[in-house]
Length: 120
Image (cartoon, rainbow, N blue to C red; front, side, top):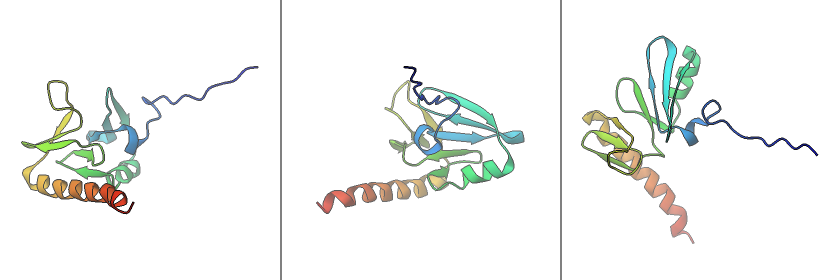
């Protein structure tokens, strides 16, 4: 009996909201996606770029970088951290103007996840 196991190649077939911490939009449609242990560059059409940049799970932190608001662990000193803070941590820079708004969004996420627990 031959059974083919379906395995997902996260390098090519990633799920944007689940696998990607942040992405950067470059020139000529080149987008660089950053996951936990990798980054992938893909050329995308203008429509595809518009679709991912308007995704509500991502927040624009500077001119070309969008962060996954569900993957953020800490915001400090103009940086958004996605893993344990230290030498190996992944982070993206954020402008001071947008840092306050992102902190508000993070607070809303905490309240949303805490709300179901209080109803038990």
